[in-house]
Length: 477
Ligand code: GDP
Image (cartoon, rainbow, N blue to C red):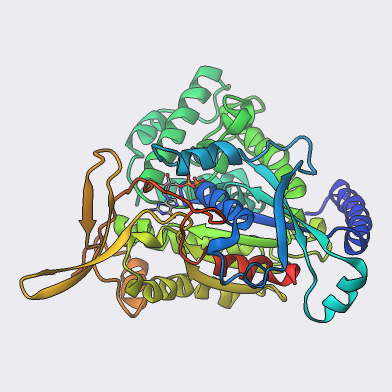
């Protein structure tokens, strides 16, 4: 249902948006780049390395505006939104390239960073450029957890439907025993007892966390895992309940949980979409596909479903409320990037890309992106390994070598060959296989390598320049 308030909100936004885009076109254009992905997909590392490599462009040959010298300078500027936390670029970069390199703290909530670039117009624009000189393009990067996007599906679900679905899904996943035990003997018709509600919410959150750690992707409600400053608030103190057998009077556990679930949707999910999502022009969705493959077929199937859900958020018309909010505005380009590609030898990268494309295909077939251009690639925002070929028993193996996280030991890893045909992974996943039949995929966690960066060079990466070219290249020429 679309409420009048939502429409009115959308209209004001539309008018403001129009005014903003007019002044931006003539003055200083702004590109809002959304960076999302599930927790630990690599968002923080991606943004840090992207910004560092746009400031020092020596490793960005595939970004045409960098290679041609059209980008004359790039510098950080105060961001336009005063109430959104700033992405802590300096600390994250210091962690990654300092004297004892380590991975930065991951994304926990939404944050923003403005990188401004002085760009000399090229080609036809160059004629104009001779008159007008270089212009400034602002890149506003908005980092937000993919878990929050998955919450869009909740808007269309009643508490009853959500409870049923969530309880059914629990059966195929690890970690739900304690929550199910906590549910036993709970009568949804009795008056709400706050400590009991808190116990149920805590047990439910613990289950979501275990499922996430076991590699499952769709662990909504998103704020249960990444609560930001909402931890402990009533909007996060609910849990699914089995269908009540009789009536549920006002003030009962069921009614109160239902009310909180609705409050979560109205007061947490909707503002996120209104304030952040609705303003994005370009989007990158980061996916730890290798991590899911390592976790097994169920995690891969879950990832496929989560990607379909995430893609659904970009499909106009899918959700009436969102459609009214966007007023025809849409994301122009969406990149799906498999991260941490430095965990496998480059000979495997085309296969990893093919897996990403196959994961996307299903969702894309059903989705009408109405003009959004999409692409899939395999990247590493910060390359932590080097490649090496080892021979053993007359066979040669394409390995990657790096420093292991934890022990600090150097190790070479042969991660296993990804199949040439992605169906060999996706079909058993869809059929509910427990384990891969005749293959094992290893993933080790490497620490960032110690770096000596030459002047003009950003941190080493794989295809970050290609990703940047797809996402923003056209706005820099
Ligand atoms: P976020 O939760 O999406 O912000 O994820 P992070 O950016 O914090 O990344 C999570 C973890 O993935 C890091 O701590 C690293 O261990 C790993 N990681 C991320 N990007 C890369 C990469 O390019 N190469 C390698 N080897 N590991 C990465």
